[in-house]
Image (cartoon, rainbow, N blue to C red):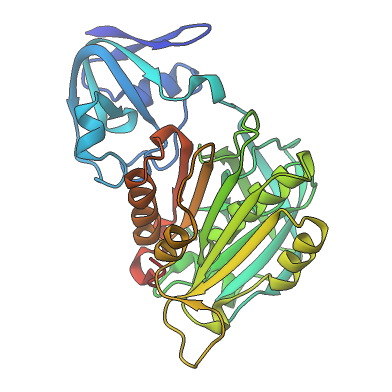
Amino acid sequence: MTSTIRVLGDPPRSAPVLTGETILASLLQAGVAFPHNCQAGNCGACKCELIEGDTLELPYSEYALSAEERAQNLILACRTQAWGDCTVRLLDAEELVLHPSRVMRCRLVGFTDLTHDIKRLELKVEAGGPYAFSAGQHARLKFAPGIPERDYSMANRPDQEVLEFYIRQVPRGQVSDYVFSSLHLGAEVTVSGPLGNAYLRENHRGPLLAVAGGSGLAPIQSIIETALAHDPLRSIHLYFGARDERDVYLESRLGELRKKHPNLSVEVVLSQPLRPTARRTGWISQAVMADFQSFDGFKAYVAGPPAMVETMQQELRDRGVALRDIHADAFYGQAEDAFNVR
């Protein structure tokens, strides 16, 4: 039996759906663009409002959709099966940006160590472009036959031709182990994307709060550098959380940005320093909350280990920040060894 899914918007869109198919799968199969990422109920990228319809929800992560959100008729399109006609509405349709999906052949032209366990990859697009994305989005990288694809965030601005990625080595990580042991300059890498909805909302002109943990600095870097390129006087507050001194990187780059933009503040917070330090210590969320009495007019962008991202989101919501003003990207690839930067 075939039913219809309607997506409210300007213009409204629709797609057929077979009974028992998920809303997201049906929309994508029909060529209807819809925000998504993991397609497994973990990230929340496909979160939308169910206006009406007969549906069945599959298991999902509470990080992606809280009980409070579900009580407000929010669903995950990737985990919601349609059993009849359905109507959904995107949460921030007025801010939705959809770029053409690309599968590109790229060449590794830069390969450097940022820390003991994070490498910077610089990729030049050789075929399949041009590649358009919004600051804060990510792509799917394929390094070699037999090596699984993985998602990594672009650290460069969208107007820069060379793509930049920060890859952290994770314990028993098949892909990161390959990158650290076998990848070499000149290697061919397939890049597919863009993906993700935790991107810079360019219509917003108020202050920004940017919070990054570990390699989560990649999308946050793209966001703050893009925002400053568009408005050099933009008020931006960056917090970078790391475990210890050896996990801190890009300080010179951020220092140069601060010299050019006094309206940019940068705070590095260490959660487990091995030696006495002059830096701030403790949970990064506590540092943020100690520094602000109000977040009126702010947009918040958060990226990094899931525990840190989830805690930061909850702290912001407890302070009255609306869900539509929090744009979060949890790096589930770090979950096995998610260092404590909460």
